[in-house]
View 1 (cartoon, one colour):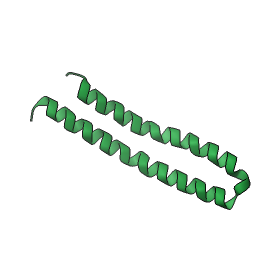
View 2: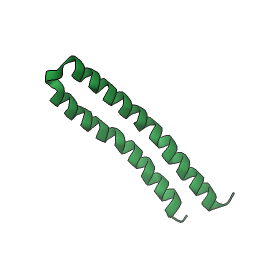
View 3: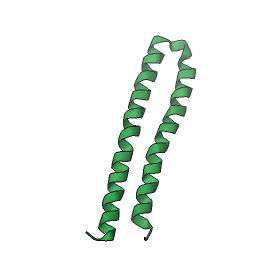
View 4: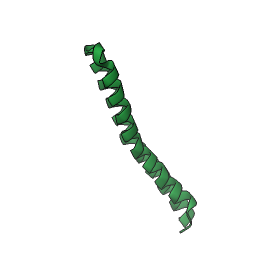
Amino acid sequence: MDEKAAAVLGAGLAIGAGAIGPGLGIGFLVGKSVEGIARQPEASGDIRTTMFIGIGVTEAVALYALVVSFLLVFVKG
């Protein structure tokens, strides 16, 4: 296997593995937020704000994985 093929394979693995955690985290976060809003509708604004902050923090992990995969593909070593 040459260097370019290994970099492309590593990039695919990096973004694939890096997207699993945020996908599960965001799904869990939104599900629990919906449950919270259903139980206490008057607090929906606060719950929604906290949910969006959590989504942003969780999504950062996937963006880091994307940056790593781009570095593996486009930076010559």
